[in-house]
Length: 320
Image (cartoon, rainbow, N blue to C red; front, side):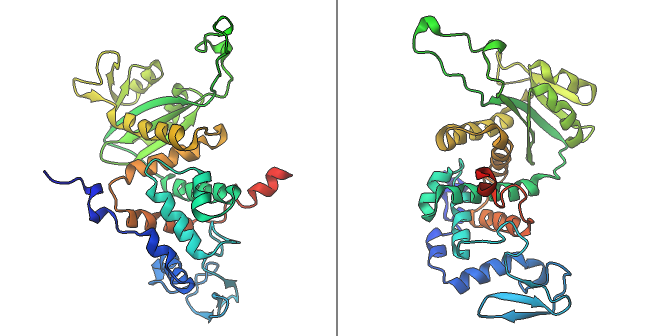
């Protein structure tokens, strides 16, 4: 019997051991080749795009001959104003992409020997860069839609007599949110975070092309989709798949997101739920790629992303 691709050596094209054995020059050359790939790996000015630059070998920076702008390999990227060695960023990205169910900031910090705060921000910068790559996705063809609720956990009382029915709206915390996923068969995965499933219908209309065939479950929130698409419904209380209708690929996405929440992060704050949702969509879409290709893609996304307005100086703002 043929071995699954992910179990073969072809899926292991990246070695964390090799990254940690890199010299500073080798790590810098790797970053340079990825960031300036459009120019064959040769540096060019990020401000005016001029390819004529002076090279300073001691400080590993360049100076544009046209506008005199001085820049490094991380200037203007999500890694700008970095404190760690470039080799550490390559290693962090490798650890991040190798974790098929995600990785907690605590574990990432231990692997890199950095503070929890450093690892937390670094992981979220990678998620933000990945999310930018996913932001312009347009889906078509056969599309599966499903939703699941996250957050807002209500802890039960110790005594049975004091316990309440947590299904009642009056007993909810108000923090529970719905992650709605739209997944194109043999294509991309797009998640949204909304208050309830029905709120995602307008977003689905924006991102799913007219003429697509939409598969959805029996939830009432999807009834409105019938006005815009050819919709096939599956009642999960009867079957997981019936008469050609199913949402199994959407459910596969939620399986990964649930495992990330329960097995890695244990708790996902509501304001960052969208970041984790997009990360798991990216992992689902790229699950059959070699880890070297994943590392290249994540690093390229980070180096193509501008300075983060959310995560640059995050802990300084939190303290204030």
